[in-house]
Amino acid sequence: MSEKRELTRAETARLRRAQRAVKEMEQTKKQATRPVVPVTSRTRPAPVSSRPILVARPRRFNIALGLPEFHLHKPKFAMPRFRANLRFASILISLFLGVAIYLAFALPYFYVPAATVLGNNRISKEEITNVTGVVGQSIFMVQPDELETRLRTNYPELLSAEVKVYLPNHVYVTVSERTPVILWQKGEGYTWIDATGVAFRPRGLEAGLVPVIAVDEPVPGVKVLDDPFSPPPYMQKELVDAVLALSPLLPAGQTMTFDSAHGLGWKDPRGWQAYFGTSAQDMPLKARVYQSLVDSLMARSVYPEYINVVYPEAPYYRMAVTETEATPEETVDSEQ
Image (cartoon, rainbow, N blue to C red; front, side, top):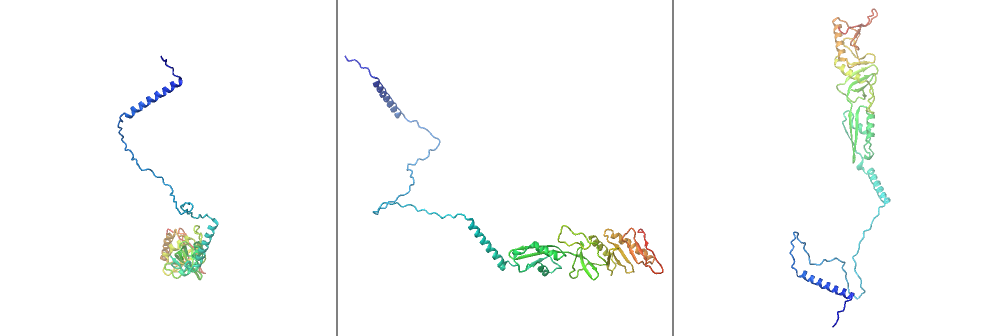
C-alpha cells in the first residue's frame, strides 16, 4: 500500500496558480456568453469614417535614366530686402525740394499778372497796385502783412487794408476808405477831415462837406491805441461834432470860421461876427440863446460888432468903437 507523498512548497504554489487560472478562464467564459443590455444615448454619435487619414508627404520622383539616383526639389524664390538708408532718403528729399523751388521761381505760371482791388472808391486801382508792387512778382514772394502795412502808411485815408494770396498767382486787396465830413481850409491849403478828426488828402469833389475857414491850428486829437497804423487825429472829435451840429444854423451863402480863441462862428450878413465855441454838447442851447439875442437887438435896431455865445449862461455883444465914443462890452442876461 502506497503512502501519499506530501507536496513541496513549490509544488503547492504551482498548483494554486493553476487553479486560479482555471477559475479566471471559467469567469471569462461566463461573461462572454452573458447577453448585452442595450444602452440608449440621447446624443447622436459622430460618424466614424472608415477611410484612413492620409498625411500629406512631399512627393518623391524617381527617374530611371541609368544615372545615379537624384531628387528634384521645389525651387525657392526670395525677394531682395532693402534696408532703410537715411542718407539716401535725405538726398532724394533734398533733390525733390530743390527741383520744386526751382520750378516755383522759374515757371511764369506762378507770377502775378495783376492784383484784384476791392472796396476802393476814391483811390484808383492803379495807385494801390503800384504801391503793393505785386505785378510780375512770384506768388511765393508776396508777403500780405508787409503789403497791408505799406498801404496803410502811404494812404492815411484808409481805415483798413487786407491782402490775401491764393495759388497759383492770385492776389486780392480789400480796402476800406474814410468818409470825409469837413473841408478844412487854412490859407491856400485845404484838406479833408473825417468824423474821428483824421485829416487826409482830398480826391476830386465830394458833396455834402461842411467848409470851414481856419485862422490857426486846432488842438490835435488823441491817437487810437488799438490801430497802430492810424495817423494821429488833426483835431479833436468834439470839434468835429461841434462843426456838424452848427452847420444847419449857418446862414445861406456864409462859410463857417474857426480860431483858437473863440472857436467856431461865422460872419453874419447883417454885419457882425458870431462865435459859438468848440463844445458840441450845448450847441442847441447856444443856438437858441443866439437867436433870442439877435431878435432883441433887431427890435432895438442895434447892430453890434460881434456876438459871443461861447458861454450860453453869459452871452454878450460888443458895439463898434469909434474915435469919438467908446462903447464897452455889454453882457446880456440869458433869460431875456
